[in-house]
Amino acid sequence: WQGDVDGSFVEEIWSTPQGNTIMGCFRWCDERKNPAMLEMLMITREADAIRLRLRHYTPTLVAKEEKDAPVTLKLARAEGTLLRFEAEQHAGDLRSVTYEVKGTSLHIVVGFAETTAADGTKRTREALRFSLQRV
Image (cartoon, rainbow, N blue to C red; front, side):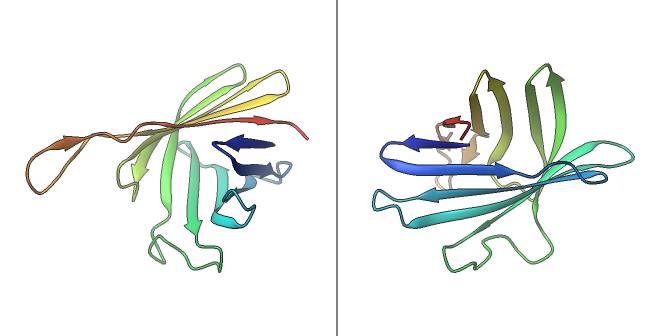
């Protein structure tokens, strides 16, 4: 799946399921097409739930999350071609990730929770929205 976000190239690739897992990766490039952020993803069917785990990396593969603390989200909704995962562990202000396939397009919405700054002001990041095309 590939697309464009404000002049930046984005790409998401998913493997075929093997056993209880599906592996994915995401690449976000700057306007010069150089990697700005990379992400490894894993969807796993576990005894109590289906979970999405992910880690972010710099272009030189330096992990942004702590060694034993991947971002963990739990499947909260599965309807047709829509999957919604909600934050469970080590997610910071990340609240949810929603995937929806519509025809040849993959729509991804990354939602964020409200946070409170040191001065007491409340802030909510605008959701990230990606519309990628199957290639």
